[in-house]
Length: 105
Image (tube, rainbow, N blue to C red):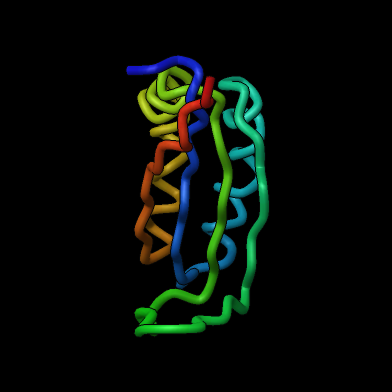
């Protein structure tokens, strides 16, 4: 595990219950901040330029952490996992953790 490599989280989701998902959204940012995360962007109308994109997803979200350590601690946080029940109940989702490129010397 390298502590100086940025880790990106890429989320593809569709929202089935907006009220339930809103509970998750309201609680998400304090956990992101607690683990030094950065919200990068979201898009409710992503454009696929090549290949097939699963039709069940209508939102893409990207955020990052400065290290795997921070990302792992965010994911393992009991409070975050409790909050995530709202997301799990309200969405269909894929969540990928992608390592950034190490700094070059």
